[in-house]
Image (cartoon, rainbow, N blue to C red; front, side, top):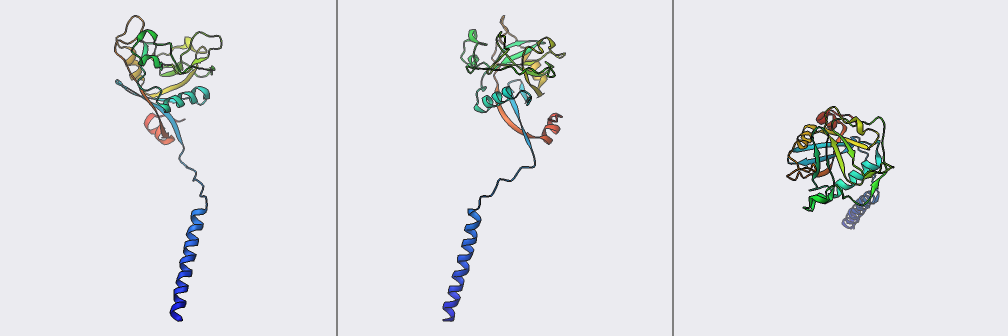
Length: 214
């Protein structure tokens, strides 16, 4: 009888332990809040080196669009199809992948982005702007962009095109690309392809690696 009591007592303890474990797993544990905030930036690789791009939160439509395209792999193997020394390099046209240079500069995702022109964001060396056709609303191309390679900047473009980002690193790489041999239409004789992806950095990493505080 005593032995049976011990067995029953042991089973009772096991049942209590199992019930406690079940109660733990059945409770929905909230995801802890990460105390280290991260920021999304763009990594743009070329055969000349890698550029890192900050997208302005002050231009949310352009920022969200570029992040979406970059995360989907849209920009991979697209080329810089137009380069002008001491001015800018332009890319982002999917037509530049088809082997037909005559249609470069005419393609995109099939939509435009409303202008987000801000008077305090200027066309300085390394600024990233949205290309566009000549339209009264100054709406931007859905994917084509340019990087300013003129060291003093290009102030004549201010208030005419949306500047939605800047290079955190790689301005000299952009400048080198702008000096490559090209044809009469400013297209490089050799394709300069890009590989673009979104990466995350903590604020401390941004400060340490790029001397940048968002």
